[in-house]
Image (cartoon, rainbow, N blue to C red; front, side, top):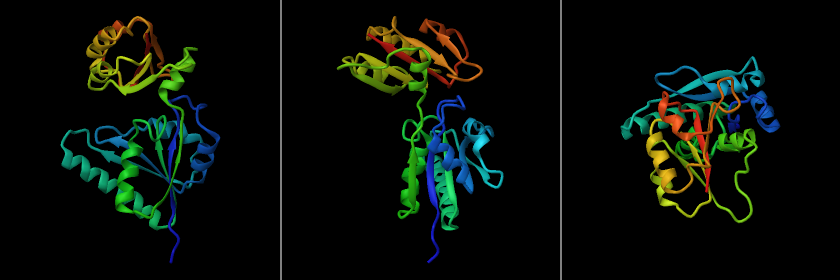
Length: 234
């Protein structure tokens, strides 16, 4: 029986090329095939851009397309088709790397790939390489303590507004990723929780377009930016 390959889910960090682990670099260098995710409307992959110095010249780079739609049947079909493409590479005995921004198991496309691969190819050999998250990078960039002592930390998405913030009033600290198109409701929820005044936002952390917002209300007067996160506390 021919030996199957191995799939690595690799986190390349939040954007700064220096914030990528030694292990991630080693695995990326060994890859025969490098997969990355993109929407059907976008060819660019920041994850590939970050990892490009370490990708072998002989490695194939393949973009997996994911439709930006709420139609569950279309989304499910895309996940299955992409997982099957990865599985085909594994059956050829290849070393396969799936690149993802930040950490592979934190609000990551790789999480969906991981679940679907296990359905398509239950015996697949998979290893996940953790990466630095955007909220850890932003906290370090600001020299701001993320959590300490007996405090609690809520990590949530702001993509659909501030509903999650309203559900957890007992936490002392919060990290909100995807704080962009519903920022008005996110701000409203932070004010209700008494966390707005001690909030700061970072956009494009560690990259050329990095911008820091000490007043969260300023986020409401600009074009929504997906690469924005908020750190707030009581």
